[in-house]
Image 1 (cartoon, rainbow, N blue to C red):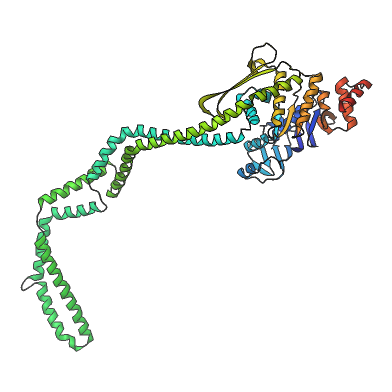
Image 2 (cartoon, rainbow, N blue to C red; image 1 turned 60 degrees about the vertical axis):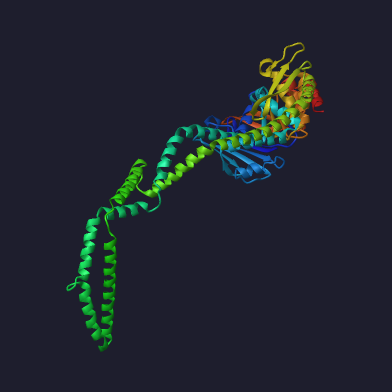
Length: 550
């Protein structure tokens, strides 16, 4: 509930600070006194957009604070979701700066205007002419029926399954789209994959083939050099091995003359052994090397194939070709298996469709079951509000389409007079009739769900006499389970409030300022008498005012 409202430097308001109580509060005042200004200030702190015209003094900032008791509103999840500190007594603040910028806060934490507006909608329901028009919208009409049908859990399950249905349906469409696009590329991808697979690609193969090609392509020069090397080592008189053998024998004769000679001998022995081993390997390599034109042609062909593939795929290594081969393999395999994936996903869509249908059926049956009760309640209440012939034709018809609130199409028709044709509310109901219908619906909703603070802005316009008295009684009855405000110009409604505030203009040195005060019992009698008979307070008006308060 709204516990306190503070407004500074807004429109005609210099500084107003008002504390409110639970129950039914009425707000009165002469036309032009600033009742709409007060509501405008409250709307700003609830998230309405603002501009510089909001400022009374354009050189100072406008500050509006509203304190709420939200202990019964189950808003902890909202605060956690938006990273806000939860307090049972929560303060919303709005600041409009002289620069035109505005700032919003919840419990001193800066928030976006969207967050403030979303929270505000859960704290105060401002019933104005604009909201009366909501009565003509199917979504609002369904909300009323669902409240009576206790459909909240059914709708929760329906929306969860509907979201899953949308997700799975999207996945199916993506698979179908993929198949449509992939079929066009499948043959080409298969051709490219076959080329790469025939190349028998493996890591390091290019280097090996290039080494082998160099050897085969230069076999004569290699044979010549190997033969020359072998001859240098093994020539009978001047060969390196023969001379090293002489050197080895010389140092063997010296090794007994000390460790230095022995060490030198060991090194000569090692050189001889290594050189002898080289000579043996040269001989083997010389005998093994031979010209092989066929193998040279094969290796050249393999290398050329690699080079062509690299050029074709715009890469420089075999490893990159292998990566492309794996990617193509996945694509080709995906297309090969896409049909089975599509069938599996279609089966999943069918299953979730059955589940969504089942919840939609539950919602529809529950709605149909309460329509007679809703019609009776509407017609009974409206009869007391001076519309004895008001009649409704309400039908719920299931369609094949999944909608946000089920599969139903709602027919919500109204006739104000006996014998008149039924028509849509927005076409056949007057503004006054819409106001009374909305009040009736709000009073019905109050008995079935936890509504926020209700603010009725001159809902009684165009109403007088006994009807206004009944409207006041309805708001008074609603206030037993919720906080209700009514901005009114009718004494019959104003008198029904447990508390009454007066909005008035006050002439000051710097100009005119709007003020607001809570009225005592005597002040209420005076205010009601003025509303009944004008400024000249007659005894009959005062007596009537006392009677209304009683």
